[in-house]
Image (tube, rainbow, N blue to C red; front, side, top):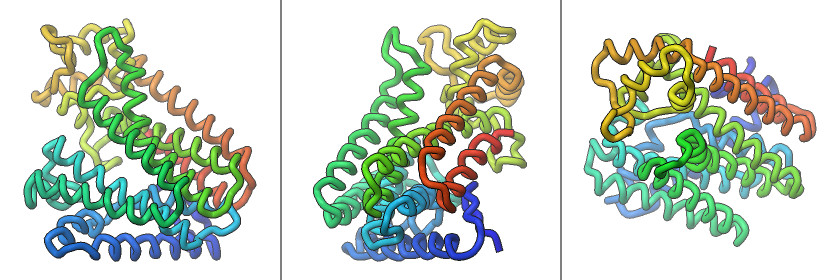
Length: 339
């Protein structure tokens, strides 16, 4: 039976079994590490881990490890777990900042307990991740420390917003890389590094994580505008309702094509120049219809295709095999999912 995972085609047979076994070991280590603290922390700290999730980042690390000499080693499993812990920690903090009530179909930690508990649970995950990564040596500690800094910088950049006279498109892409791409890049780097891959291969897989992470966010941007709710599981226009201007919106607003002036009236506060959240369903639908056919949407799709081409180029420089095939299927899925 063919195994697939979040757009990754793992093929059949031994390779798929190895990857699934490694993922289960990550899951076991994750729950074990988060259950080892004081009782007052364990329930909150394991809340999101036990709620499920795609485990995309540890999967990326595990696939990257298959370009090294010891895929699935204990160090690979440890590094993949560190990546997932770090990701979960950011979700706790994001939910507090966004005042989210749900996460993965369950009440968020801040909704179930309080903002303070959610923040402290996120801090605990960062602490456990730091403890685990220390077993991998000083270079791994340096890598994850740099990644922590990138994640925080991205959140700070998003919170502060684009500076006066700054380019909002450049600002947005920097935020996307720092908040999403940087951790997936580290997943690729860690997986290859802890499996004994050579330096060139490690750098290539880190770059692949950069590109794929950014591309996934851009594809989500496009889906939020262009997708029918029943196809994607998401309600189109969510970002517009929250006053978030994603890449297609920014590109459309920067242009002078048909509808650009009306889009600006709908989406930009005339007094402050800031993004204007849409609360009226009629305005949301009008904006979506303008955006779907806009030059900005075409440009966003073109950028996504360019990212996929870059990822394909990186994969072409890596050895052929089932891990390469799996990554190639992921790149195609990233583009194809936008329709």
